[in-house]
Image (tube, rainbow, N blue to C red; front, top):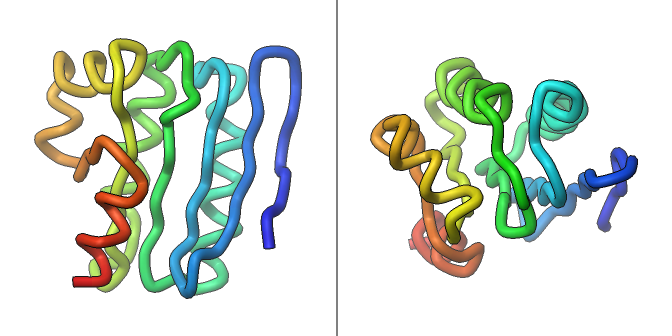
Length: 121
C-alpha cells in the first residue's frame, strides 16, 4: 500500500512497503520547511518495525543541509538491526551527499533496485 504523507508546493512524500521494507520517496525540495514531514514519515515507518528503511531521493530537486542532517540523525538513531539506505543519483542529491561526507556515513545507492538487491542478498 502506498501512503501519501505530505504534498505542498514543490514537495511530495509517499511511503510504501516492499515486502517488509519501508520505502519513503521524497520529491521536490528537501529543506528546513519540509524535513519535519520526512522525519514524521520515518518515525511512522520505524514504529511498524520494518526489516529495512530506504529513503528515496531520486525525485528531489534541491537537498538542503536540514535534509542531510535528518539522514544522519536517522542513521544514528535507527536500531542496528534495521538496515538504512538512501537512494540518490544526480547533481541535486548525490553531489551534496558526497561533498559533505554524508555518503561516508550513510549507505547511498544510485537506484532503488540496487538497494533492494543488496538488502535481500
